[in-house]
Length: 178
Image (tube, rainbow, N blue to C red; front, side, top):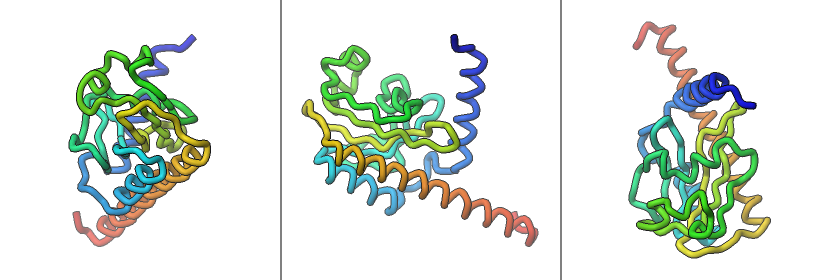
């Protein structure tokens, strides 16, 4: 039996960790965009995203094939994937009871296929690297393995940027700069 207070504490810890990366609402970065483009190419999907899930939304650090910069967490496929250890694969969202009535399925962008590889750090899911198609489909084991490698690259990049920011903050505090 799950204790609600443990879930609330775990979610608070997850959100604190997510915010520690300082990436929410940041500008696009070529390194993340390259990863997203490779995911779309390898999986042959028209849409690929690096999605970070906060308390109310999924925000896209990088996106290919989608104009939106965020959606509400309530309709987010990625919110279903963040606590998983393995990818969430939905071969046909119209036939999946969790998503069949989702406005992202019934309306634009007409999601049919979804594969979200959780972006995990320090035991928490921060978001996903996901690929989306407007047609039902599957991925090969090799494509899934490449998504796993790419999701590790996203986390490694996030951790590097956080470490560099911490070093810069330390330098500024030693020199008396804000």
